[in-house]
Image: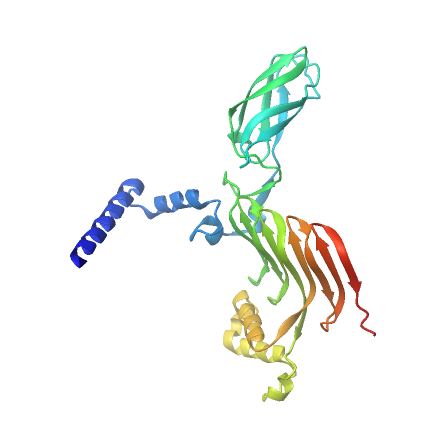
Length: 319
C-alpha cells in the first residue's frame, strides 16, 4: 500500500514539475505574473497582490467613475444634450445602454465612449440617430462598470491591490491604506512620528464597514507601575524608551524602534486611551458610537441603526 501511495505521489510531483516547465518555461517570474493575474481580486489567497505589495502612496492616482459620453464627429455642427445610463448585471458587467434623453442636433457621425476607470475595455456602437436625437446605443465589447473612482499605481492598467504607505523621513509609517481592486479594503491605520496609533478604520470594498477607533496619543501607564518599578523612572513609557535607546542606538526613532517600543509598552500593561469608538455598515452609522476623555471617562453614547440615531446620551463627569 505504501509503495502505491509513494508511486502516486511521485507521479503527481512529476506531472506538476512538467506542467510548470511547459506553462512557465521554468521561470519563476512567469509563474508570479500568472499568480498575480489569478489572485488580483482576492484578499485571502497567499502571495496575492493584496497581501504582498507595499507601494509609496504618492505614486497612486485615482481614475474617475465610469460614464457614457457622446462625440459628434461632424465637421460643421455637433449635437448635444444626450444622456444615457448603463444596464448592469449582478456582477457589474455592462449589459445594455439605456438612453434617457436623446438630445438634439446630432449628425449621423456620432460615437459613444465610456470614460473613467477601465474605459478602454468597453467598445460601444453602433449609435442610432433619428431626427437629430440619439435613440439607441449598442454594446460591442463589455467590461466591469464602476460607479466610483478607483486607485491605480504607476503605469499598471489594473486597479491597485496592495497597501499604500506614507512615511516620515525617519522611515516611520504615517499611514497604511489597504486597497483591493482599486477600493479601500481592510484596516486603514494612521500613526504619529513615534509610532503611536492615531486611528484605525475598517473598510470593505470601498465602504466604511466595521469598527473605527480613534486614540489619544498620551500613554497611560498601568496603575501599579510605580510600586513595581525598581529603576526609578517616572513612567513606564520613559523606561521603555530608555531601553530602546540602548537596544537600537543610532536606529532609535526609526520605524523598527518605534514598533518595538509600542509593542513592549502594551505587553507591559501600558495603553493609549480611546477617544472615539464608531461602528459602520455599508457607509452608514450602525451600532454604538462612544466618546471618552483623556482619563477614560465616557462623554457620550449614541446608538445608530442603518444611519439613523435611535439613542443618545451625554455623560456629565461632574456628577
